[in-house]
Image (cartoon, rainbow, N blue to C red):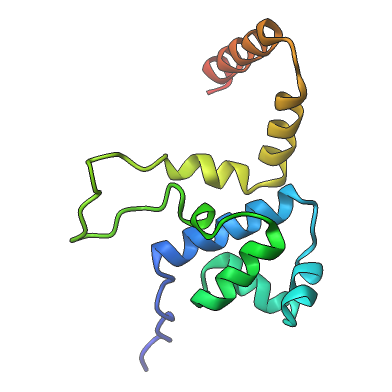
Length: 138
């Protein structure tokens, strides 16, 4: 008997776009249910979009961009280059770990709090502290 085959893995671009939808929704403190209501969808469908399990069509992406108050291009910032496609002028996309971090509640909370610190020297000292903690705690 053959083991069950895994469903096709989500396309990296679909996963990236979905993670950017999630990040922006979280930045606005909006629930999946509230976004789903605005789109006339269930929160489960929003979950599938955010995971990249279901691809977001062009008109739906425009609708999401309007609701989340960002241009459509926001969802593609830092997207991975697809094999066989040139990267334009050779610019490297921003590392995926940055958007992955910002898509977490801790990453978003830390970023919001850090940006709220107005004293540039204090911000620099906090960065130094975190870098030292990372070296020690590795």
